[in-house]
Length: 301
Image (cartoon, rainbow, N blue to C red):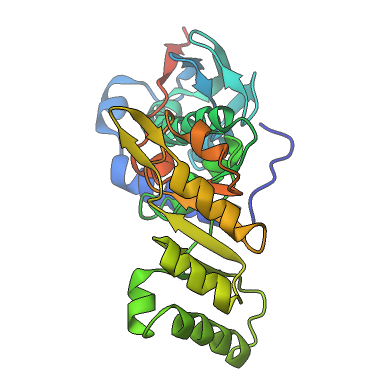
């Protein structure tokens, strides 16, 4: 088992265990009838996790919690750590112990490990492509019930978490602006809320879609970050970041800047070079490709 694992502030061992309980109930239910029929009770097994593609591994601690929730004894030793780059054919870790429990936990462990590693791999690729020009952010476009694990995987891949949910940041978008009668009214409403609820800890971010909206934000002030939305165009001629660059120049460091829209592995480098502080991408978690990892099980004689 890993000696120390530092969880992000929004995730506890209890949260992880709750996901695992639901997963085991869904998959195993009252019992794995195939394993019970074919594997004698008390049989032992050896198993190894094997990477079948290059990537960044994430979710090792979660796998440990899966097998801790099943009848033992089961020992698990990792050859890698969360956040490590791994190569096709590399052994990630080894299991030994109760064969029935290993087989019952196999699918859930792999589902979570492959998903988190897929997110971490995509994040690492985007962080590398940005080449230090901006921090890569996730969004709330996560799998329901798995947000904590999805966002942790982003961190393990070298990215940075945006707000965890609707409760920990004021992010004013087009619908909020319309409901408040405009940008000025929305910013003023946000400050009233913070004052009335004594929530000075809440940062305020506002979305703008054009220079007119941006100029009004610059005139009003009172925000921590401005979200520059859909200011990048992709055409057959190439990637046009001129509007985004001009917007970042116009802000001139008065607020932090975040770019969103048309963010891909192919465009993120050019976006990072415009001078924005952050680049947010929903694709890190809503369109993930799981990292191919297998568990090779061998029953003891």
